[in-house]
Image 1 (cartoon, rainbow, N blue to C red):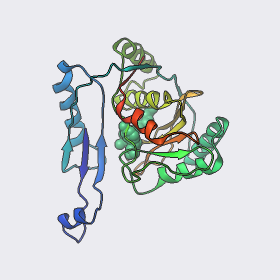
Image 2: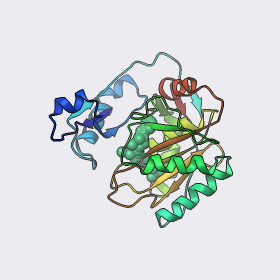
Image 3: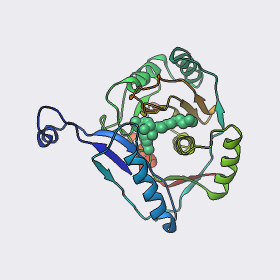
Length: 253
Ligand code: WAQ
Ligand code: MG
């Protein structure tokens, strides 16, 4: 699902489209489901789009595609919630953990700049772990991870574990599924995520090495900036990474 709003300036709407001003991203969601679940899931996505803290969309697009390829099985990352009281503290946590898995200071700084920029993207930025260069071909859109889900049996166990910590929410389950697919890509070392929802102030960092680390107060309440950054190893084929993230179906368990 993708919900967006046309930018309205002094120029007409048509003109803003003609000069290539991108729509404002309101909400997006994706998953792998059985045919029998299509209407329930689509209805849920529409409700979510229409009642979003980022505003009212004027366009909602739902795409439903049959998956022909057998999904890859990937491990679900373990979840930990860290203690963090401020954005200063969260920056410190991010630098410490990401430096620990070999990501340079420049790359982390560049990643945080993308996440704190007013230009909110619909997808993720790709940043090289050493040079800190940005390498995704479409910087306005970014790379949108898709075709991902959790296996039924794993879903139940996860819900039980998350309920114990009172975090059994759609936001956590969807973010953990996405982070697990991203972490299963051998050329990606780690991810940082900050929600672009003004009322969601918990973000996370994730990697195969340290799992899914939730960071409360990663941003201030009311702030509509956010995004995702994937840190990529130098010397890899960008097109292959994008193909895996966007097109290859993966189910976590
Ligand atoms: N692929 C790539 N990037 C995405 C995708 C995707 N499928 N979905 C969202 N993004 C990017 C995009 O730039 C959004 O602006 C940004 O991430 C934030 O998306 O443990 O709510 O859906 O408590 O606002 C994480 C913490 C919540 C959950 C994440 O993200 C927890 C969240 P949002
Ligand atoms: Mg959002």
